[in-house]
Amino acid sequence: MRTKMPGWKKNLYILWVCDFIMGMGFQLSMPFMSLYIKTLGHFDRFQLNMWSGLAFSATYLVSSWMAPIWGKIADRHGHKKVMLISTIGDGAMVLCMAFVQHAYQLALFRLLQGFFAGYVANTSALIASEVPTKHSGKALSTLSTGTTGGMLVGPLFGGVIASLCGYRLTFFLTGLAYLIVFALTIFFVKEHNFTPVPKSQTLSARKLFRQLEYPQVVLGMLVTTLIIQAGNNSIAPVISLYVQQLLHGKGQVDLMSGLIAALPGIATIIIAPIFGEWGDQIGTQKILIGGLIFAILVYIPQAFVTNVWQLAALRFLVGISDAALLPQVQSLLAKYSPNEYSGRIFSYNQSAQFLGNIFGPLIGSTISGIFGYGGVFLSTACLVGGNLIWVRSSTRKIR
View 1 (cartoon, rainbow, N blue to C red):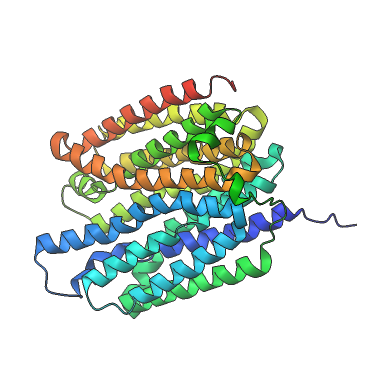
View 2: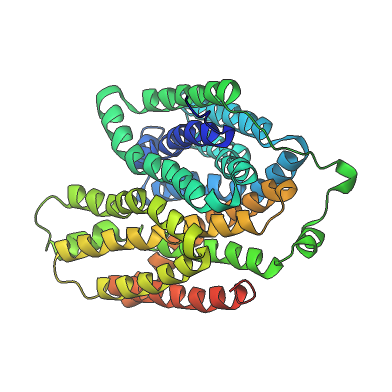
């Protein structure tokens, strides 16, 4: 006789697909955003860079502010409801981008898109509130590979669609993809373990942290998320320039840059569920600390590589270290946060991710301008080293 699949497993499989589509949709326009802006007016180099930077950063800035608000709404009304609102709003803003006529309109819709960035955080919160604790590490690690995989193939699909069908159709198709996520969520995702928090009992952030059994662990993980994301994204502004330098201006710079940018994500998708299962068995914080040590060991040599294949191998190893970091952070948040406040805790974590996405490129471009490309990797290793000290301190009580 067949054993009935637990409800949380059904949700996990559906939400993995949804997170994959959301991650892919968010990255579809990244390869050609600046080129699209170029078609919307006559800009000099400074103006083009300004509008491109604004279009890229506007979503992250607003999302980092809105995520905790969506988390509070989710704790009161349910994660699924917030996910549905987020998908419709996000999809509508992307559809509008297909019809803009001026750069300021595109920047405005990118900014408004940030108001609806609550989907991925609430998928994690929903699964965390339902999965048995002994399986939470593997479940959340598996779920995280959905977003990672989508963000990995998004630029590739976006570039292909844009080259075949044009920029505007790419935005239109992305909006339709979000409608598919809405349909999957409304018909197939069931919220089994939700207890609403009345408005009168909604706590401020300070009071919420006082209610936690291990507030230093949760706060430590939020800071850790910010630092991990900043480190991962610090190389983003200079990766193609570093590859060009290693190739001495010869060869397929664009192709190699894309490959090297994708390698960490490929490694993370493969390894993350394994590390999640190990964490459930031996302790999630041990996997996290091991991942930070390993990250330091693979960041430092990247500053001294002499050819592009050495860099490629080390970037793949960075993906292995990533598999031991963010998914384990989410597992610790799930294990040491009460279910009734999981929406807010995971939304705070998403805010930290968005802030890391903003600060990382700023750190990388500044360091590379002063110390060269190698300095970016050494500064990232120092950042991770500081994070290691922070994690050991904040998890001392649970160790």
